[in-house]
Image (cartoon, rainbow, N blue to C red; front, side):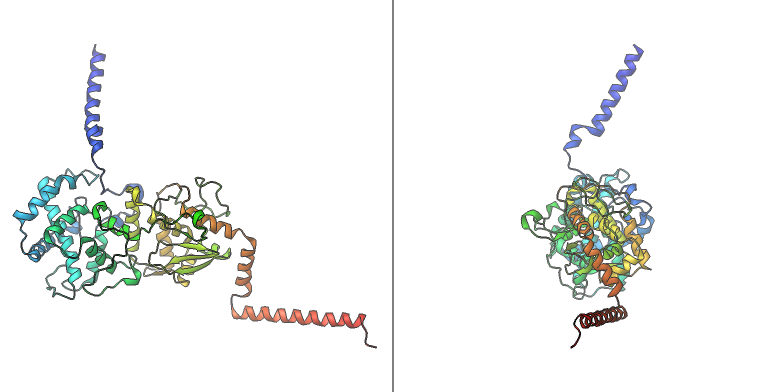
Length: 476
């Protein structure tokens, strides 16, 4: 009897736990959209995922580094309510935050029970109004006088603005987008949240729009990013910026007949981002077979492949055609590592977003292995940097994809590029021609020496020909 009683007790205990943690009602809830970055992705790079100056959302709200800005948020709340003219805490902000509270709490996958409802509502109000007022002030710069007491724009401290922009694009430092939209609608903001946000980020991040990195004061960025007018599908600001890079799905290569292959697929995956030995250039027989790595830049050059600076604005748009690899220009600065890592982390947590940044980082991890590879890409106008050395750039790309393991899909665009590169590299004539150009036509003196040798050989041949001719055809 005692055994039966003990068994029944365990059954009841497990049933209660199953109902609590994995019940049917729980499965009906929409999935969370704001996640902690897993340890396997962090890999000793915690600073790349944590805010330096401002916390948004609950995850880092109690971090000591962001407490100074928590005080300044109240100043921005006052500015935002004054801008609108008719908004008040008791009539507008608090009721709206209470209305959104339950839905917003479900957007966070990690436990936020440490934050009471009162504190969570306060956070929704402060963070939303801070972000919206920040975007509006940036949009109005040059039109309106900003007082010296403004904590961000008051002393023209560009580094503060860039730090804030960096923190707003951290995967763990997000607010649900519908919360921003709701408060923006209350404040009757013009332009829209998406326009204000992209104007802010495009002006401060060279990687987001390198050809238009300094918009005139008050000018709104054009809607050249891939985000339709229906913003309901956006999860947060990082998701919005991600959509800026997502290109339209390319046509099937077999149908179009084009030889151009673009590294811009949204739903394609790589098998592994770990370095492998570059021992042979053999294309996989099946799309799901393990992929070989792309040889690094120096070896690609030795194989006859030419690098060229791509003309597109989207630095993810890598192309390869007839021995020419086009890689758009990228400026690598102190924020590039954080920028790429958090967009990759977002893609890992939200597979429906595609793998554009993961693919790009993995490709650059393959191509850039040493400082010599960085130098080659720099010589062709592909990479510019403000970091310490070429070796630092190589290390950035070599470390950024550690811990990520994925698999290719059928007609994966990355797979097609790899196959074309390998196919081209395996043609002996391409290697011989590259060696000839490198060894004999690499500098003027080599060309002069080669020309002199050809002339001397030609004269010797002509002289020998006439000597033999005169021998067999003597003059009478």
